[in-house]
Image (cartoon, rainbow, N blue to C red; front, side, top):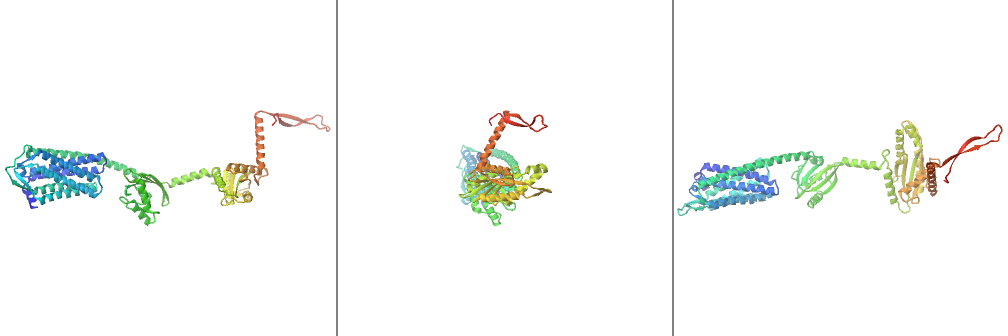
Length: 590
């Protein structure tokens, strides 16, 4: 230690020492800034930043060494071997490049520290190669323990410098790392110079490939200027890049916080990288520390509070496995009475992004749309579409020996009520009829409004004819009871047609058609009653339909003629016949 202090105080020009320290500090600041910039980039851009960082660091180490050597008194009497001097510069840059590459490419502290240690080794390699380039009329010997101490100083301080720089990219960490790297270079150099023992030897000559200290001072000054220029350019680029990143970060933060969806990003291990406030509010995690935590730990904490159901470890394992295998998953979860759709999208390089969307209102709207498409808007009873589907399901459910009954209902004199009292009263009457129907049929029966004043009922069970007859009688009685609507007492009736499966049909369309035929028969028989379908009803309906078609065709072809039949009386006082009526006939055979 005494030898080192003696070397510093008595064998160096402090003005040049200060200059070397300033160059070293500037180069170290640029090196740390470039190191932090390289860590946030990827691919070819990262390699370019590492190479630039190695060039700045290597030149800074080299310039610091030779400026300090100019300040070294005994060194002024010699010269420097050019090839070895250049070799020392190449060693400084190349070894530093290796160390920086290791430290930049890893997030593990041990590898970052190892990279810094290699940078410190590069400082030592450059220094002792540069000392080997010194040619003076003296024999150079070394104190081994001091040499080891100098190497350790460079390795330890450089390792700490990169470790601190990698922890966080802010001003305090950058200043601390810059100071440590400067100490690594300066402490190594002056400790190593304290290990030098010079023994005068006039027989040692200076080779022809050497450069005198004065010329070296010019080269060193040029190198220092180059370092400063590179450092300024690097700082400018870094500032510009950080400014662009800052603007992008502002835009990203603004976009994240104004998203209607919640967003959370996880790394390959399931650790939360970033999230927006919408995510925290939607899942009620605003009071929980999230950044840097494993999702499974958050789930376990919520599980302990009773806010999350299920196996947290199993759920987390499935998410990580899906992300590693590149599977996109979509789930709908219920949290605090809300329905949330979660989409997990894998990221390249591992991890996944989860988006959370509250779809409670959307699901309610879809359910409402679905209900409206399959239910009557006025009475909320199933409409024709849903009735047809439920009739099909009923036919599939009927077992051997079971029967199914379809009852078609038509209100008697409803049009008169609608025309005389108005549509609002008519609508209120239809609602009340629907309510009475629902309360009269069985628990497993289906009631539907097919349109207008037409309703239908599906009844399933054994001995269905008896049950259908009993139900039809109750419906006629219940529907025919008086109604009190807006101070109006209304009395209507109902006609019912009944078709049974399987004897009257085994598909919905056939059953409905036959129940309609039975309904027409009930109306023809005086209304206010019910009728079962009979085979002859279809034949009479077909005949009536053919007659109607013939009459329409005859009307279109103008086949009707009018004949007058005279009516004559033989009573007295009647002197002439009178024409009393006319009979219309057609010329056609129909």
